[in-house]
Length: 130
Image 1 (cartoon, one colour):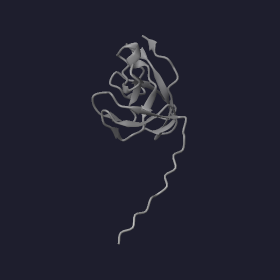
Image 2 (cartoon, rainbow, N blue to C red):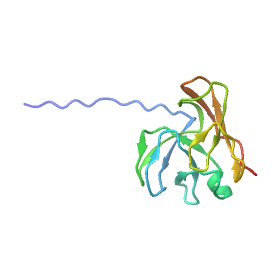
Image 3 (cartoon, one colour):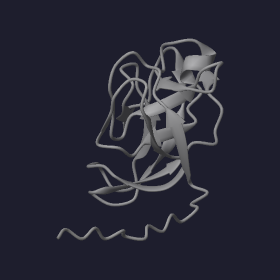
Image 4 (cartoon, rainbow, N blue to C red):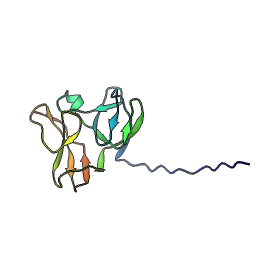
């Protein structure tokens, strides 16, 4: 006969990770900063959008998150990202993290590159209109 084995799964409550629903209308990729919509879902943030669209709450830590799916988002802590050690990371107009501060729209610091492969997210700063 067949035997079925149940594996016990342990979920550790990590206060630096939020579980949020993608309502962007498309895929949210790893490392993309997001903002909270009025209904509590998230969309990709952009520095040249509205104040709401520039107000980063977290960074996606799923490889890809399809529209309507629930995924993990890092509010604070390390993520994998190639970059220049010590460089600040800012929200870009295209919804990514860039080391080049924007000159129009909103200035939104996301965190700092801590090595050539790791970035430390600190999304607690409010956008500054330029």
